[in-house]
Image 1: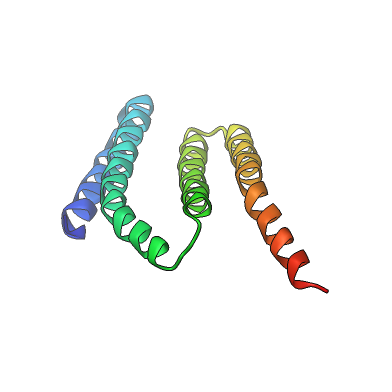
Image 2 (image 1 turned 90 degrees about the vertical axis):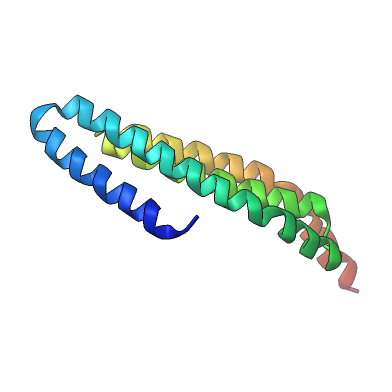
Length: 128
């Protein structure tokens, strides 16, 4: 899929939201939520096509696939958390957005611990 239909969909959606915001703010927010989710799904669909070549590249570079999948999970968490936080900010609940970001950061730390541990082990084996 090219970027043009995606951008046109977003622009038309933004225009409709702008018009609806004056008439029915709740409907405008729901429409913005639906448009954001649809755009997110389209983006996820595009990303899934890239994962298989990246896995092949990681395997050919002798990268531990557990670490590779962990890094991909961390990236996924970061994007989903950002998406959720921005939706919360659009709804006017910045405090909830901050909590979503905090939980995402904690999950990322938990996922990253085995990688940090492996790096520390590798460095300690290199030192005399």
